[in-house]
Image (cartoon, rainbow, N blue to C red):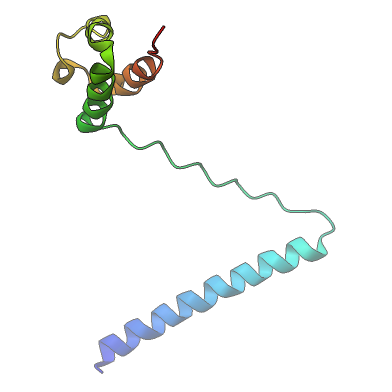
Length: 104
């Protein structure tokens, strides 16, 4: 092992030890302070972006279920004659509206 790789490994071990010491100090502080420490709640992960293919699959299912005219109306409502003309930022709204289509 070269001196540089040994040095890099030592630095990584030191960082790991420092993180472990910090975690232990936080735990001890919380246990013996008499009050729980508040940590920032982890942010919920952002919803994944919908793709054209995902939206197309849902709309195709609805169309096969007899909602072709309603699907066309939804597309027109969003300013397009076909799905590929819809702004991707509107996919979630379009899907929500399409999933609300029901028989009856």
